[in-house]
Structures are given as structure tokens and as C-alpha cells.
Length: 134
Image (cartoon, rainbow, N blue to C red):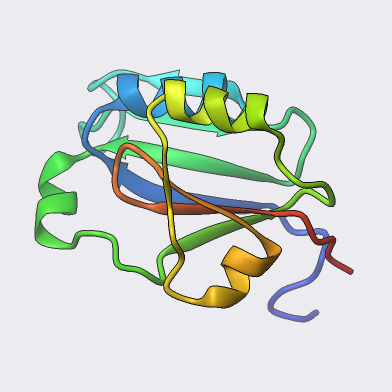
């Protein structure tokens, strides 16, 4: 068996300064669903928020840990790229901004040409590409 195969689930885990702000961005702005959450009684003592698309083989896990972000802040190549296959329209951009996102120029001009880069409330970059993958 290969170490990685296309049928294995993927979890992308990141620290968050504020799960409430992050939830607003990822649900109201991006349109993901809350798949699961827990309070400080969770193993490790951190509140968790898992977001994604029901039935998908991936999800985004946010851990309430502002200290981790202070020690290791996101950099310009900490990208999460979503291949939408369509361009964002003005209403979608306004929704992302109203939910706490900020439009920014990408460090790599490739992403400015092929999508829109959004800074999330925790300082991570989300690229919504109008290209497709595969």
C-alpha cells in the first residue's frame, strides 16, 4: 500500500486567535459547514472547530490557540488554495469581506492572475482560484 492514496481523508489543522471570528469567516464568508466542535474538555484542553463540506474527504480543523499563532505566525506562502472553476463575483467578495476577510495581493503573481487571495482573520491566506484542478 502506498503511504498516500487519493481515497485517504485529509485534515488541515491550524491554530486560531478566535474561533468565533474564524467560524464567521469560514461559514458566512466561504460557505463551509461546521462539522464538529468541542470545548476545553477536549483532549489537550483546546477548543476545536472542524469545518468543511459534508461528505468530502477533507476538513479544516481550527484549534483555539492564540499563543501558537504568536510564536509561529503565518507567512506569505501559508496558502490554502481552493480551485472553484469560476471567478468570484462582486457579491461573493463583499460577503468574504463582511465575514472578516481582507483582499490582498499574493506574493506570487500567479495567484493574482488565476484567482483572488483573501487574508483570513487569523492571518492565513486563502486563494480562491478560478482555475480547475485535474
